[in-house]
Length: 105
Image (cartoon, rainbow, N blue to C red; front, side):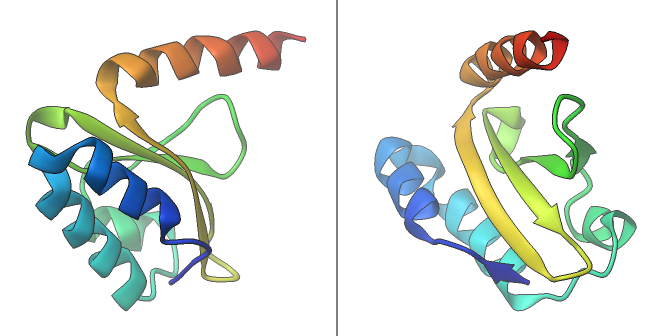
């Protein structure tokens, strides 16, 4: 799968150094495989879930204890993944509230 930018992963490893190995492991897995569907990706990353507020956005828990979440736009047909956020669970909750408000408009 083609990851549009590695910058978000690099920034996250600096911001969350304790979780850097998990972040890098997730990056390498996503980059090295070709996932044809959400079911294929879920086999490799069982935490995969649909982000209910945006079409074709997905959530992946990338650190032990669900401490970090990756939110990304994924086009399985085009094999493109664009990371929107790598964030803590608390920040994820704030993002959900923000996107829920936008969806209500």
